[in-house]
Image (tube, rainbow, N blue to C red; front, side, top):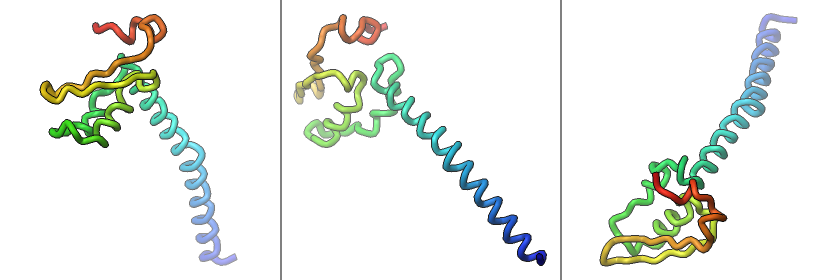
Length: 110
C-alpha cells in the first residue's frame, strides 16, 4: 500500500473518532448541562435573572415580550394569571395554587 493511501486511511480513521467523540460525548454533555440550567430557571432560589433580561422593554404593551417573560419566570410550571398596571409600570403574577403545595422555601423571600 502506498504512503498516500495510508495517509488517507489514517485521516479517515481520525475523522471517524472525532465524529464519535462529538456525537456521543460532547453533544450529550452540553444538552444535559442546558437541561439542568433550564430546570434551575423554574426555581426562584436558583433562577438566573440574566435569563429574562433579554425581555426587558420600555413599552409595557409589547405583548410578545410580556408573554415570553411570563413563561420564563420562576415557577412557570404552576397555573397562574397576570395583571398589568400600566400607570405603575408593574406586572403582577397571581399564582393559582397554595403556598403549601408550591413549597415555603420557593415562595418566601430571604
